[in-house]
Image (cartoon, rainbow, N blue to C red; front, side, top):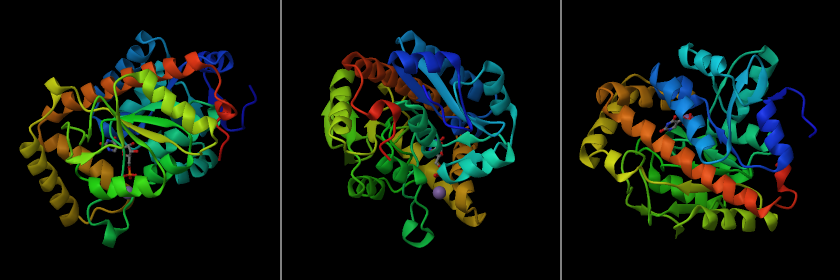
Length: 317
Ligand code: PSU
Ligand code: MN
């Protein structure tokens, strides 16, 4: 496999790429900014374990010492989990972090970009970024949505937190041509809860059906990603009214504190965890693990079909 400069791919991920085996990308903002230590490291390790259990190879992605890394060591995951101020790395941050030789915690957008460079097609996260409430004034729209539009990677998520305007987020995805596939759900989920009140484009009952849609998209040369919405398992879902009150509280705190730009999402995530006294933490972990399992199953189903046209090397951009 030819490798771009500034990249570092672990031996097992490289072997799986060469063999056309199933691989699941995992993000690292969730480690640095999504949970406190040690829950963050536990969550990341368990994701990797689940992906392996389902017969795929995990590729946790981050910027490590200025290199775009797919497949981290246990020490590197620990370092991301214990270092407080690792910069958040979206698409635009990648060249700066490389030039500085810095570490970076890749967001959904950053992870998708790196996954595509390497040739990984399937990615599991918790929740995606989206159109923030009040975006008509703030212009705060996550780069995750643009990345879904342009980069041919499928993202398994539990929807989006209602810190976002979920209706506008779905409108944006529609405009940018991103299919939104519900896994055993007609509703687009709202992260802690199973139904945001908005629908998905279509519902699917098996990982193989999802893989068939991905293959159809990429074999026709349609560029870009797909969003797979996998609601939090019923037994871990939180009470909708309670979580809505918490989110309103966190949003008001962000407004009063004048929080802006890339700080907005980490601030809201941390505030929600504080306000719920960690009750949201176990829900959060469970939904991430559920997404990791589904992603591995979809990756296995995709790999069973064999190589998808030119897509295997992720160069549709
Ligand atoms: N939403 C969550 N949990 C997260 C994130 C979003 O419920 O961990 C993280 C993801 O890494 C996502 C990023 O890609 O925040 C979005 O940041 P922004 O809104 O600044 O684009
Ligand atoms: Mn933003």
